[in-house]
Amino acid sequence: MANILVVFYSAFGHIRQMAQSVCEGAKAIEKTDVRCVKIPEFTDRLIPAIRENPLMIDKKGISATFQIGKRKENYERESEKQKIFKTAEIEDFHWADGVIWGFPTYFGSMPSQVKYFLETIGDLCVEGVLEGKPAGIFTSAGSIHSGHEAAILTSIVPLLHFGMIIIGLPYTQNPEYLTDAPIGGTPYGPTVLAGPDGSRKPSDEELKMAGRLGRNVAYIANALCMQRERNS
Image 1 (cartoon, rainbow, N blue to C red):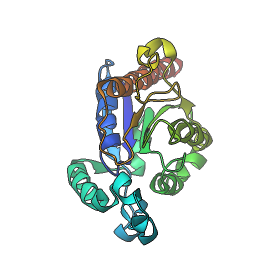
Image 2: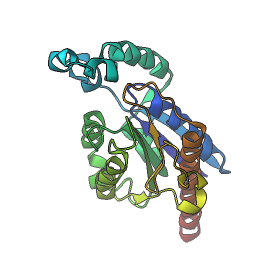
Image 3: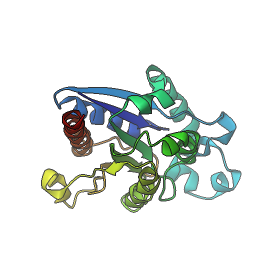
Image 4: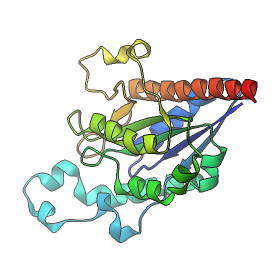
């Protein structure tokens, strides 16, 4: 049996919904146990996604486009929904045979909350706890051109430092790629387009791709576990 850890950070719910589809996909592989946990948040005054910037609010059109006034309300509503999820701890990574990471795209990379969390679990890198374990990444972005592919690619680097094996989404598994529709999805990992104001929810296609990533990582984790058992 393989243990799959899905660890996510979600400010407004898009990544949480994708994480749930990732979990469902992983559970579809026999002999797979799945655990879904959230990355801890900063204190309120340090949360970039909901901090009001008077310079932006005063600029014509920007406040309306990005729904700045509603961000805190939407964030607090989402925080309530996430109370059912346990906060990620070191023990979760010792338990896991594979880890799937989810977070929104901020300026073409992972949020500071995720980067800080990786630094807090740095001992796992020194101890080699995650070496040889498969990993996948999924993300969200405000639009097609908001850096979602760059966010996944740059996030691969720290995971390689931990010794993880990166798993993506091959073209043969995802016919949704062959479309001119405005949806997320990359060979590097599933993505969701949230829209500039965050009002767009994950589409069926985006959720399907998230599920496939869960299956891919779970399948490979199970295969590696069986091989280790044979070699032991």
